[in-house]
Image (cartoon, rainbow, N blue to C red):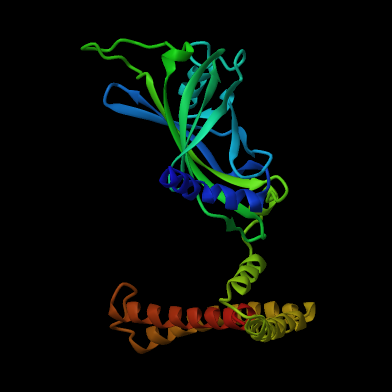
Length: 327
C-alpha cells in the first residue's frame, strides 16, 4: 500500500508543481498548437490533415493539485488536407456535414497518470451528432518561460477512433475486399498551455523580424552588448557620412554645369564634328596624292586610309562623351 501511494505521488508531482504556478485554469494558445490526423487511403497509403480552428482548456480541482477536466472543441469547416477539392468533399454531407455539425468536442471524465509526465484521459467525443467514449493519451513538459516572461507548458496528445462509430460511412470499393478510405483514424498533435492569468498575446508572436528586433534579441541573449551595438552604429554612421559626402560632391559637380555650359559643350561638339569630317576628307585626299598610282579605294592603301580616318573620328566622339557624361 505504501509503495502504491509513493508511486502515485511521484506521478502527480509535475501536476502539483504546474498548478501551483499557473493556477486552476489553463488554455490552449493556438500560436504554437496543432491538431492533426491520419487516415488510411488505398489500403497501403494514408492521407494526413489538420484542423486550423480549435480551442481548449484544462481545469484543476478546487485545491489546484489534480487535473479535473480537459475540454477541446474543433471546428470542422477548418479541415485542411492540402487539397481544396478533397477538403470540400470532406465538408460535405458525405463526411462531416459542417453546416449541420460544425463542431467536434471532447470532454474528459477521468484522468489517470500512467507514467512520468504521461496521462490517460477518458471521456466522450461528440461528432456528427453522435457521442462515444474514447481514451486520450497525453504528456506534459516542465514549465518554460517564453521571451515575454509568460510561463508555458508544452503538451503532446494522441488517440484513435473508428469513424463508422460516428456515422461517417462513405466509401468506395476498389479491389480484393479493399476500400478507398480506411476507417481507423489516428489523431495527434501538440498544444501550448498557458494560464488564463498570463496568456501571451498573439500579436507578440507576429512581430515582423527587423533589424531593431534582431538587435534587441541579441542583447537579451547576451550575444551583443549595448556598447558594442552603439560602437557599430557610430562606425556605420561615419561610413555613411563619407559615402554621402562623396555623393554630394558628385551631385555638386553635376549641378555646376549650367545651361550655358551645356550650350557651349554642344556647340563645341558640332564644330568639332564638322572639323572631323573635313579632316577625314583631307586625310583621304592626302593618301590619294601620295599613292597616286598605287591607290585604289578597294585596295590596301584605301583600306589603311579608311582605318586611320575613322579611328580619328571615333577618338573624338569618345573624348566628347567622357567630357560630357563620363564624370
